[in-house]
Length: 503
Image (cartoon, rainbow, N blue to C red):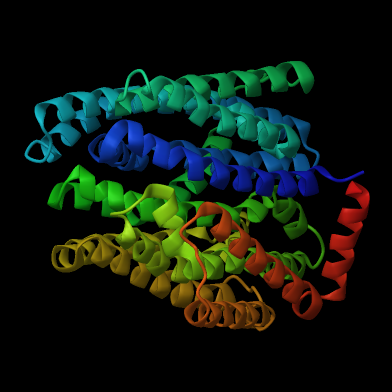
């Protein structure tokens, strides 16, 4: 029988492939029905709101760490206390979220008063309120997501996510054809999110038969949850500033139409992010258990190297393929007028590759209670990025904003954090890069050869079928080279075993 962890990893990549496929269809159709201004407006509000949405995910991480530790040590009482305290914390956070929502709405209206028309301001305010209501529902249901993750019910979580992922664009397009406004998109997303929370609740209470028993207030557990969550919150806020401030600043400096162009490039590197984070996402419970075993630190370091190497094989296929075929893809996907989005995506994707390949390190730092350094460094980098984005965007437009983000990422993820992983977190970074360099070098050789062939041989890439055939050929050569020359014998055995099981 295949473990839940392996099923979760496989379903994660099915989810990512579907996400990319859906986006390829979804984004241009959305642009067609909404137009650049409405699409840009939706992206700006989403970027502004993302600063608030980090509270839920960060608090969930604190709860999950305590819950996984209790399950790992088979302490049922500690697990029940954690869930009970988590429910209390989430209720308090929901009330705070309502208060914050009012403050953010006034701040948003003031910030964009000179940039938005009266109609844009009215619609964006309604969207913001709707998203806050969505956040409150998510917050109240977060404890059930913690239970499902702690018990490694990845199959249910991923299948549910895939269903929602396919359903969302279908219903959005159906609705925007009749009501072509950004608020229509937000309404559909909120309704589907409420259904997702309800399904998680029903699975936990009826399938797993787990009920959250009310326990006496335990200040120690609350302090542990809030303490870790506060540290992670710094990192999450830094991430949101890092990823979303560009669009907020561009909306202030230029227009919603300019934001729409930048958002297409951002859509590419956010899809790229999904390919890099999916494997690490199912390993948090595993890291927590390994670290408590004998020689736990060495086992965790070995896992970090293995997962990073496999992740590099996947993301380098995406990166090299986009560098070779990205311009033609964007022309077919969203049409003319989005050439700059190609350069936005590449400038960010190249340094971002390091962070994605080392994504499991975030879970390791959380388990080791060393996440604070990463959070502080990223927050400082994000604040500096705001200043450099304003300066570079003023001179070079959206490309300047992307250069600012890419450079900041190279310094933090590429240099500072690798030093920290080596010196403080006791991860074998030398072995990590030694193993990963083979993958990177092979992918670069394949990419350069493809670019040379593309330059000297006239290929018609302006049509979807021809471009698809070229991408398929490129991917096939890439996979064959990796399998024959780069993969270890153990990795080949695992792939063959998986294929045999499926056949």
